[in-house]
Structure formats: structure tokens, C-alpha cells
Image 1 (cartoon, rainbow, N blue to C red):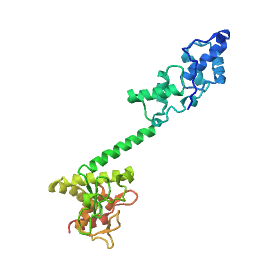
Image 2 (cartoon, one colour):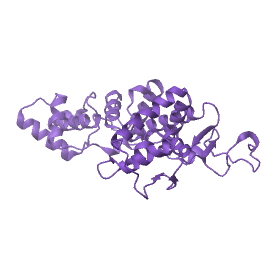
Image 3 (spheres, rainbow, N blue to C red):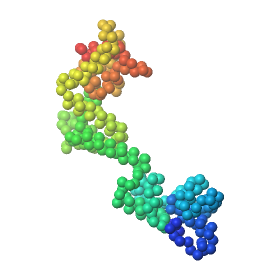
Image 4 (cartoon, rainbow, N blue to C red):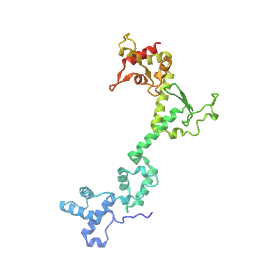
Amino acid sequence: MVFKTYPYARNEVPNDDYRRNPNDATKDRVKGILREHGLLSSTAFANLIFDDIKSKGSNFLDVQAILDSARRQGVPEDEELWTGVFDEGFEDYNTQANRVLILSETKPPIGPTALANLLRDIYSSSPDRLILTPEAYARRQELAERNSMIKELTSAGSFVVIRPDGRKVRYDSDGKPIEFTSNGMTPINGRGRESDPGFQGMATDQIRDLYKTVVEQRRLQSLSREELKAEINPARRQIFEASNASSRPTPEGVELVNPDTGQVISTKRDLIRYVNAGRYNTERLLKTGPNGSTDKAKAREFERILNS
């Protein structure tokens, strides 16, 4: 690709033709300042700025006066100047802050080639000076979160997820579910189903859900028997109080239904397993209505099953 360069800038001395026409020399100087700051340096805009500065009696040697006038006249950026500068993997750095930085350090003549070379020099020597676009920054933050969660999940190689219905699913280090043989043996090398994409096929939210579930399971597994009781009892006490601790019989037809599977929870074993599978599972069983109040009938059924 052949890039256009701009041979005249503010640090260059006009030739004899410009000296013979001071106004033209001044307008070309204005164009050079505009180019140096990445602004469109057309003759029309140079004439507008020339007339504006002249009418205000400002100094044409004052760079800031030229830039202030350009802002008043609405001079746009010269996108042609940036042709190819942020190509070849540098798209994530196409920000206004980086453009200002590159323009301020590029020596005349200023053109796409000079700007592109300086961008790559800065990236090689001091990349921290460059700012990512908001989209690129968000992508990198999300990737860092994914990698961190996957590292934690697979810290021991494979990991197990206990589903709300009590099923245990083991995943290999790539996030692929492991299928056991009919006699319960682990597949060769303990690898998951080959056709499953594993972590690569999961959205970040899916990995985040797995992570939260496994972290909570590991926390509960680390608790002593007494600590587990303390974990459950406050919820039981709150539910008991909400039901007024009355001896009223549970209305017929009231059931505790697993909201994830639609299965009825009718045994103490299934109830404790579901409660321990998630921090907010007790509330999910018992809260009802638009205001999230506790269903007293369900609370009494919860107590009945738990004390059975």
C-alpha cells in the first residue's frame, strides 16, 4: 500500500513562492498544524481558520490559536491520515488517546507510514502507554475471568458438579463430561466425551454458573458436622417463625417442587440434598408471590419433611 505523506509542516521553512505571498504561506502553515494534529487540512478549512484568526486579531504563530479556531469551525479528523495505521492486529488500540499520543511524537513529514511505525515502536518498547478500546478491554477482562475460573475448577484435574436433583456429573480438565462405562469404570485416560466442546463451547455465564456451584460445594464439604448444622438451622428457624409455629395441618395438595427439574421433594434426604446444592435454594423453594414473601403452607411442609 502506498501512503500519502505531507511534506510541509510547522517546523519547515516556506520556499520562495510562499515568501512572495504571505497569506498563502500562512494558510499552508495552518494546514501543516492541522495535519500534525490529525485534522482535515483542506484549503476550505484553512481559509476559514485564516479568516477567523485574522478577525480576532490573534497571532498566526500561536499553535493553540489555530487549534481553537479549528474547534470553533468544526474541523473534522483526517481519517485518510490513519489509513492502515491500526491494521495487522492493532485494531484494539484505535482510540482517540492513542491517536493524540502518536501524533504528538511523530516527526514530520507526517503520514500513515510514519504513524504506523511509531505505533509499533511504542507497542514494542512500552505497551503500557497505549490504551485499549472499551470493547477490547472488556474482552480481555472476560477472558481473564474465564481463565481464572477454569484454573480453579480444574485445580485437581477433573471436578464434580452435583445437580439440584442429586445427580453427580464429573468433568475432565477440558470441561467435557466424563461418560462412565456400563460397569462404572472410568474411560481410558479419564477423558470426557470427545464430541463435547467442553469449556471452549461454553459461554462465560455457563462457566460462571459451574464455578459458583463447585465453589459452594467445596465450601460445604470443608465444613464440620456442627458447622453444617449451623449452616442449615438459621434457615429452619426463620421458616418456622414465618409459619407462626402453629399446629395447623398442612393443606392438602401442598408440595415442595424442585424449580429446576419440576420433581416433587418428598423425603428428608432429597430436601437436604437440594438445600445444600445452592446458597439460595431454600428461598427458591418457599418464596412466592410478586413481593417474594414466604409461602406459609410450604414452610410447614418444609418443617414436616425436615423433622420426619
